Image 1: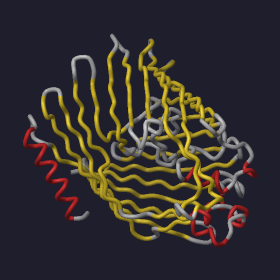
Image 2: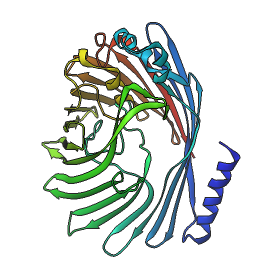
Image 3: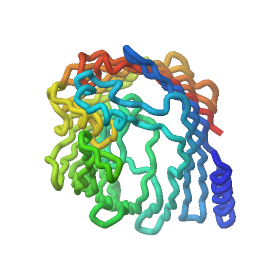
Length: 396
């Protein structure tokens, strides 16, 4: 963390303190993480330090302020070329002079993750600033969420903030209409959303219409002027909804989004899931995901498909997938589990054993290993290697 950012954080806390009704709460966590990846030819490791500082204050009876600063440093293997994890056929299709362009760098970061105010008025709540935007009911995949893409290996990890103005208007008992505007360079490329949330019997539901700018890159054509691959910016309109509730003791949810693209082919995303907790506290869950942007034949996967998935331009490589999870509390402090991601489209499978340990009240440890078992060239191919992660978090 630089001295400049420490001073900015402290100054902001002091400034808010000056006119706040209540003392500014300053808290957060320190999170060291070790990540390793192993292929048949190489092994890599990356270590990160993350310090998160949270500010929380009630400025007035109807005004709240929230902010988060993240400071992250990377050590070890900080340049990862994804070609090393793909099939020989894909690697050989890339000219030698372009192969270094498929490297993902990990660079030290210092940034404002969230900073917003919430104003509670008589007929609505207004949120202004950089804030978390969470859409949909899916656990791993969210067809309605155009702002975030979850990591299937770690789907519950916190999502980044986004600049936006949001208004929530209650409509009677159990209904809320929300409007959101996230500005960009022009009105056309800014994100706009209208959403209705309601409840029928034991089910919560939402209906949403979203317009945003999207970019699909061609990862075979390099633009020397921009020093990056060529991209096609276009308008994306998402129409859909989500549902979550309970049937006979089972939690169930569903989510759907129809994507109307300005130039690229339209596509749909669908999620259906269910979970259940047994009397012995064993928890089981399964979620099915279909994305018609994905392909059904792994022999048709291209470097552009792989890169679009890594860059979160599309959520998946293959069309149909199933995520499953079994988790059980061994003790009050230790949970063990195993999850899997199965590509129905190419019959490949990733297995992820997990462990969480509450070391003390203010410290927990998470660890998992991902093991790919699929045939060469598939979404979870054995040749792509396996990996693991150990992450501790100490709260203060």
